[in-house]
Length: 346
Image 1: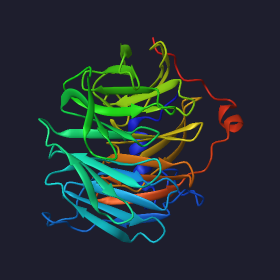
Image 2 (image 1 turned 180 degrees about the vertical axis):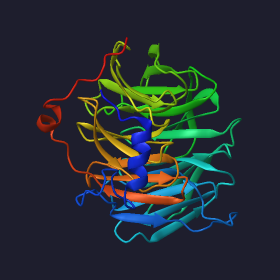
Image 3 (image 1 turned 90 degrees about the horizontal axis):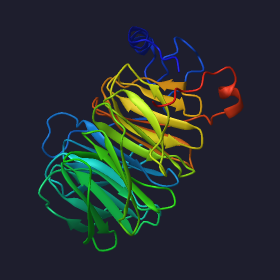
Image 4 (image 1 turned 90 degrees about the vertical axis):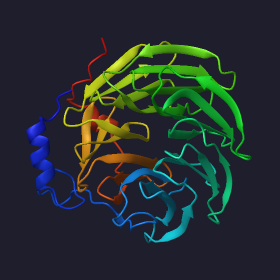
């Protein structure tokens, strides 16, 4: 794939209108449907940086959190806070709604996981504190189990209905940054600082494979909707696709303008990534081509979340804002025509 050079990407980003794409003065440039500006929290004199976002199934509500220790639930329609959740006493790193939208889970540097009731904002259960900070969480597709990883090799699993820890597995690194279940719930993958991906069957916990995937720390993992392909990205500035049955590298394409800090699979053909270049890049993963570029953030984009029902993607940034975008569906025929396929991983 042909990537834009660094100086070109930065020039386009600077020229873009607030919330538009870095496509010059294109009047059809995609703009966010909402820009949410967070207010200072319980321990901050400035607005908090945003390091965690999640969108509720159906897209009616989103949740945000960051370095002010507060979790907020917002109405996507009007951008107003519906609940302010206080319970963490350090930086919140990850959020996840349960698949039925009933629960919200949060974790962070205070080494605990908290489960909240979305409709009331009530704190239901908590787990921890554990030995080290927790960095990423993911619900099982059935919604009954939550997996969590952080700055230790332990992968922890919690009963979502009680908050009790039910299982542990040993990951491939002492600094784990990404965890994800497959769409059918039969696999779990984790990765982190050493660039190794480890995959287990679930619920048996039998390790199926481990392979070297990264040139630098892996920050994010996601399964494609069919469930047979895993996508990894991070500080190596390469987005890679892997066969989860064999660990064989399928394709990779470069994102040289910045480290990839966040990722969301957006339907059958698109992947969105956010990074240290302050841009959300939308890729057609089948061709490795950049389908869109969403500009307007003025800080690294630490978190992304996508809801398939509403077609909305949420981006959270160190610039203290959250942006809601309505993505256009990909056209595989149009995107594939005349495109160079992504390089195979050697």
